[in-house]
Length: 171
Image (cartoon, rainbow, N blue to C red; front, side):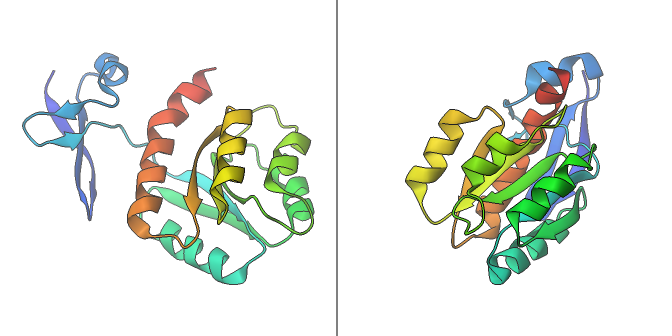
């Protein structure tokens, strides 16, 4: 296989094998020539934010606008209104979900969510133990962002979502 650049980012180039049959086999490995992760990046991963803190919602919104392949569909303050909206968003790929919420906790939100294709979830929390509990209980939770967020940590979680999304969509 020949190598091809699939995306350019501020943190470097991402490479993948040009032959599509080998892409799955190379996920998570390193291109020895460039020492960069080999990932194939889908275009326009649609995501939402559910957080009762306006400053946290604004920060995540600004981070989501940086990569060209992320699209913020909506940001919600209230979990119950978000629960209703998510039922009507069939192409949703990723949810940034605050665990510690006044109306409905992030864990209860996931229990109440009944959609044919559950999106991937990234918990946002200042409480590491609650996030770990959520990751252990729900198979679609792929990680968490500990408040106060940094862009490199956000970017790593989004890269993980890009790597995992094709496998979850196949199931």
